[in-house]
Length: 251
Image (tube, rainbow, N blue to C red):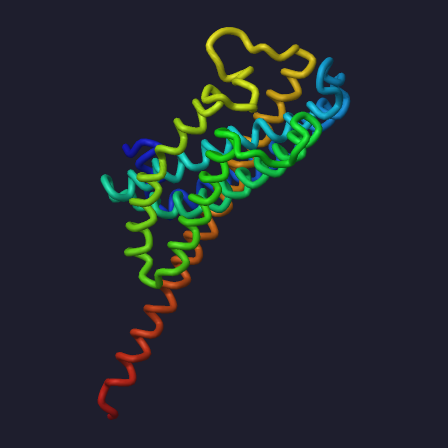
């Protein structure tokens, strides 16, 4: 009997499973976002940064998901190049634009947070610069794929680029230790978090909510890509059938 992983490797079974689970995930994302935003707006101001610190409730989960999204693209690319997984390229293509949006959201909210804290919307800080490079990598992957008409070649080239670019993730992780203005990790760290529970809980709820939202968008994008490829294959089949019919001798 096939395992769940083997079943989902079949595009037809994936479409059946995702059609069933996607509405529930989308509904969960909506509920969790509502709760998380309520907790964020009602959380007390930080004792040093005041209400400006509440930007972290969107900024920090966006930063986590920007790196997770790229890791997902690279993992999917590895599955394509090494294991020839039937849905690997679909996964990589679906995750890249979503990861790019969360990376842009991270940069924008970071700039809004940086203005009252640092006196500038942007500084060429190691953390900010490395996240900007991550965003440019996302854009490069999307642009490279769209510039090549041969989908098989585009999939292989973007897979190679994503695997080469994965070195940016440890750079982002450890960039705060390189004479950076950005504060060090306060949640994802060895030892207990350094954030007060009144701010930590809204942050965790928002992180879960935005992660579920990422999953919903990701599954929807994968479904759209599978349908697009099926439609393209159907049209190609119809064209070949029409050509073959036209070549048949009359009578």
